[in-house]
Amino acid sequence: MKQLWATDPEKIEKELSQIINNKIPLSCFKAGSKEIRKVWASGLSKKKGTDLLVLYHAREPSCSKKTCMFFYHLPGSSIKCFEASRLKKAGDYLGLEFPTKIYKIQRRRYGRVSTPNYSTATFTVDNKQRINYGTVENISHNGAYISCDLPSIIDEGDLINSLSMSVCLRLSREEKTILRVTEALVVRSVVFDSRTKGLGIHFDLLGEMKDLMEEYLNLRHIEDGSFQDVGHLE
Image (cartoon, rainbow, N blue to C red; front, side, top):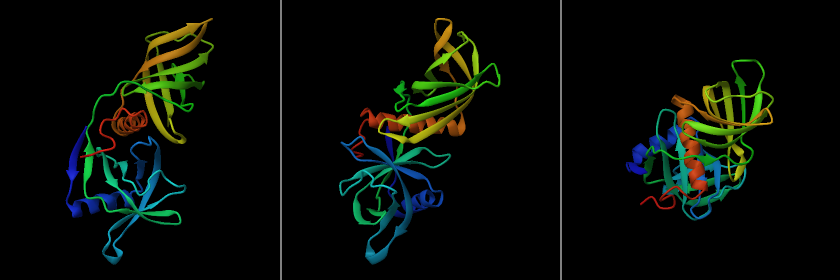
């Protein structure tokens, strides 16, 4: 699941600089809490011989003086993470001890995960202009189940188009991932009273959307406590 990626201080500092310069969010996770919050690195401080990673937070994050894990995803790279403890706090800023190791999260295939907090979807059918709405109930790397209430019957084998899914984390409705799919195949259709009530769909993601899906599935598995070794990287 994890692989040691860097221990060299210069390599780590270069990686952290990329996170800061590209304004990449960090997903803060404290072992035993299952709470995940997004924070942003704002700079590196080397005053008085103590190297600190400075974070900005609009609200108090879950990290305390206990060690927390921070997951991040630079474009075109694997998801990575590091451990750090809070050493200082001043207003809206936190000072973390400088990470000594960075780990790369290895890709793995997960089954479906539930998509809580009213995760939503919009799509069209047969490239028609009418926009349809639904709720995403669960999702995987290459499929999802959407509950909906459509006046027409959509059969297995039909295509839906311009699919946009806004999926949430369990512990925060504010943290949303937007996944866009050009075309998806209906592999299951639930019909009741001449109305389509649910769609099981299959799709293939590429590039940025594939990376976003991987990151979302990782975070959901952390929340559900099924991400092995999440609290201990050694």
